[in-house]
Length: 99
Length: 302
Image (spheres, each protein chain N blue to C red):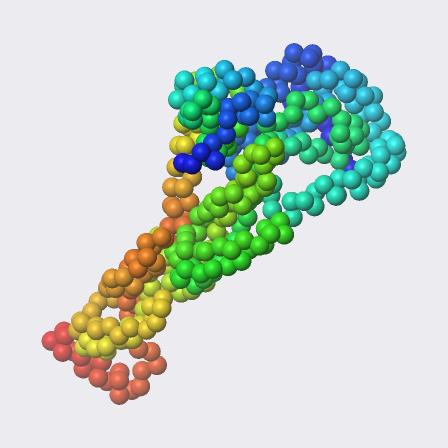
């Protein structure tokens, strides 16, 4: 992970109009990783998409940190189930009409 | 342009209080929120619908206007005029996405009905989180099974930009490949979005594919089945000669190791090919043949 892909938390707070405490709480709950480079605290850009999702879940649905964590766990399970379903469907196709 | 019944969308009565509307909206938002319904276009649309309904019904001035005009909607010519004025604007905005689905659901694209009544730039409420990180672009690529037997390079045009893409051999039907940083630009120095390409792979070969293994049914004539011999069969990448053992039964399976489909991102690794023999008994027998079969039959019973 090179430093250029790290985005300072200060920037994120301004861009998303969120409090710094929101991000530190996400970190405290193990939902996001804060990286410290010299004096500035940052988040890797690969995690921004998840951060955006957490902000939306918090703002749109008023979910707290435990709720966000639960949602993420369930989404992981849905994803795993969907890929399993896709596999089973392809296999079923072999017996039905040969995809 | 059709009239939209916002009360119906939120499932509330026309006399519903603000609190009831808020409650109904929040409950529906929890159900249809796109983050909770990934890759679900229907939920995405529903979420847009309920947000629009909420935008109208939760603001007293919007609700009042809607209730007033809504009553005699069919005579409301002024809406038609307003619609035409705004249409040119909107079409311009939509072109940006080209053939791709903008993966973002937040940026409030309202219905024609809404925009004609409240205008495109009407009170949009809280701005969404979208913007800093660029949008993800979703694309679908339709390929034939033959195309993905070998790694190949293709150039895709996404939003006017050419992207060189290496499609690894053995990519599977429905698989999504993420190409980092090839989505929309971020704003204010934000990271770029990604390009997500879903592969739809059509198999119009005679082989059936299950993960990396191929399956094929091969006709076997009676005499080769009984006496044994050689048989030429087609595999995915050419013909091979098989030795058929004497007295091979109908439905016998033979495995040809490594003659299956390439395994994704494992160079030189292949699945297997399974061949099932289907016995073909002779038809249109001559009298001589019938005679000889009769003889064989008698030999067996005696």
